[in-house]
Image (tube, rainbow, N blue to C red):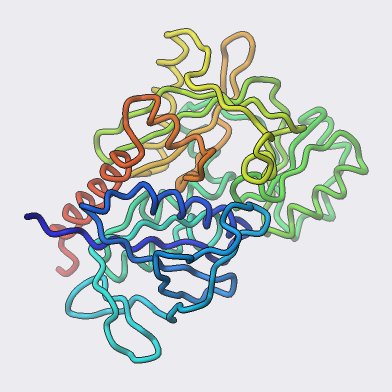
Length: 366
């Protein structure tokens, strides 16, 4: 009988999306085929400390997105460590090896999880992990850099202005209005899931939006408003990349905000498959794969589009650790494409192990 793979599920983290990560982790753990995997639950609190949790009652208020939290009872402080073997999870109170991990699934959204920092740590420790590696994660998180790379590759994106914190006093509303029109969106360059995003219709809105966005990053984007449908595509693969059936988000809020995505169950509706012509579906899928590859991504990502009434479209952003909550689009689009939730996790783990095996063959000394 084939040995079960020990899979470390990393969740929580020092991020504005901490609670979303908890919801995603709950669903990933539930979907794991327990005949194939031995899950090891590793919750990271908001201060950055790591704890090993039992599978039972590792969350508090798990059915309430507003109050969901890590359960600290019966948890042990842990850390990953170097050793003769990879994937050593150390019990920090005893300094002894707690578990050996075969692979890690970082179900971490936003800063310190999706931005290349966790991927860098896991890479240094030589642990296989799900999702894009350091570069793909870092540039995927930085909306400014991602857009520059996409433009260079001929991928259509919305017009925008990038502003760094030391430049904010030089920023004039009149200049933004002239270049981009109104309304505009103001957002942190490095944040996900609509965190810190505001829709601006007036100068008063603008000043508030700038202040909010700079709370989350030292670099922000001001983007033109695109009147169009919000279409998303799930992407999966390393060298041989596939795109799912597209889905459409129909927001019941002013825009597809953080609350609409994760807090308000009635905040948005998902239509999968999206009602698009075959020709347009093909173009969007091809562009999603290209956007993924241009940023050197591997494993998984969700690529978001705006599609105008005339059929033209632009890429809005990429999410390299998409949501895995019970209302998240990434697993739903793969389910609609014929890949069940458990099989999706199987494939993500396979891709992580394949990349790790490929990289192990490379020389690190000369």
